Image (tube, rainbow, N blue to C red; front, side, top):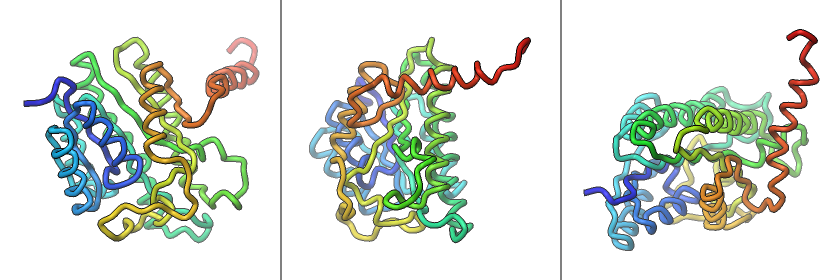
Length: 267
């Protein structure tokens, strides 16, 4: 039997923000579907959540850059019980663009863009039919850093571009669904204390235990706190640590100003 909340599907659940978010949702009574590449990590988290919360936990071992794996996860995301989708899985492919391996570039695009879009498309119709549902897509503050050169920021042309897509896609979808009961959010964390920077994404970080990269950052739990609080207040763009919310409101104002100024008379 499902919980009153239903089921939350979380990608990138084997560590970091995904694992922290899955834990928080399970503590609130959500059943969970945990998706990631590392089976042992998923099994460990699933056992902790079952024992700690009494909820039902499924695991789906999948590489979202693989079309077959993505299709399998999409079928589960389309389930009638899925009321919360967290598209958290992401890889960075950092490095000079001219030297970026084509295979890794394709993988970054597949995980960060194609999978986010496909899983959202899979989940939203059933949510609309039920009249409730939440989609949180994880982007990055690097989506707002396009004009900034590397050093100290990473060389990130493809990664930054994919996260810019996630921001625009999610904001546009939220506008399209504004008259529905669905909650749509793009979560844009800055540097977070996870293991994200310990791998470029071609292979997951080895080992059964979670780790933290040397750069540190905001604890993953605080990122989750910010996201959940923003969902409660209806914020579409959540930037953990940002106090002045007029800055994110200014995105829409700047876009309107550019389009208005560029419009020819009579258009």
